Image (cartoon, rainbow, N blue to C red):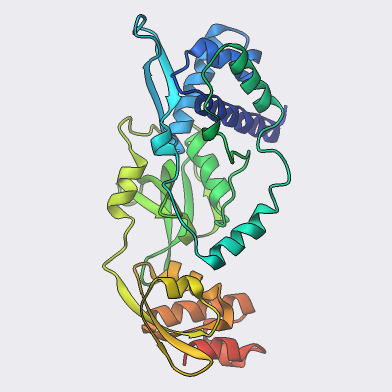
Amino acid sequence: MSTKFNAADKTERLLNLVICLLYTRRPLSKAKIRDAVPQYGTSGSDEAFDRMFERDKDELRDLGIPLVTEAFDILFDDEPGYRIDRREYALPEISFAADELAVLGLASRAWSQASLAGPAAQALRKLEAAGVERDDSSLIGIVPRVRTVEPSFEAVKDAVLQRIPVAFSYRKSGTGQGTTRHVQPWALASWHGHWYLTGFDTVKDAPRVFRLGRIEGEIAVEGTPSSYEVPADHQPSAMIRTVAVDSAPRRASLRVRTGAGHGLRRRAVSEVGVDETWSLVEVDFTDTEAFAGEICSFGPAVVVAGPEELRESVIRRLSGVLGSGPGSAGQTPSGQLTEGVTR
């Protein structure tokens, strides 16, 4: 059996377990979970199932899924039940502006298939047949894939799940300089729209938080699976909250073309029309590299007027896309694009 097949099979099993625990309003016993999740039925013995289930619980928690343990029957409080805390799992109520709704409308065209299929649907049928009280609202929108824009996501996720030490190049906040970090990955979690890795930096001999968007290049494996232990009391979200904000907010001055940059305009501290084509928009930011990436996504419709550090980060990114060095912005065929950023 190939490693690729094993990884896919485990991913499907974890997804089915999440669906199973979201399906019910009340905690489920291990016996019902084993019967509902198809992959657990293939375990050869009770001991094998127990080991697999314990590993799966730990992995879901490492991924930030709020799996809780509590008594499923007040008359039998010595046998635990399991569920996912939907208040922690679900998103709060949100609203969208017109341009955001347009983007969501385009994205919704990708939802051409049912959210649940195959073994997942079979698990739901088994739970229904067993008389488990159903909660359909928790299952809307579940799809068997997590999409991210960070190239390092898959490699980092695998390192977290297998507890493998890794090394990678990491851009520092503010300066943008890359340094090699040697890390024992602990957990991977999303916070305020960004993915973060928590872990132990073996060179600095201290716990650290790394934003995936700042990891560059390949992730190098530096050890074997299960070669270290994650602290039992580790809480990824709490750790990320304490260190994720890089610094006090700073203010950027941006020239934004008319009809563009709606996301920036909504966050603007001030906006003044320069002429019929451009507006001067001021936006607060904390992470230079992340904000530079956002500005680049608007192409020539947004030009950085200041601060200098942000302007240089944008130039460096655009020069990289054009396949030239940071000092050759004015010599490229698309020179007006990078040259415009420096105005």
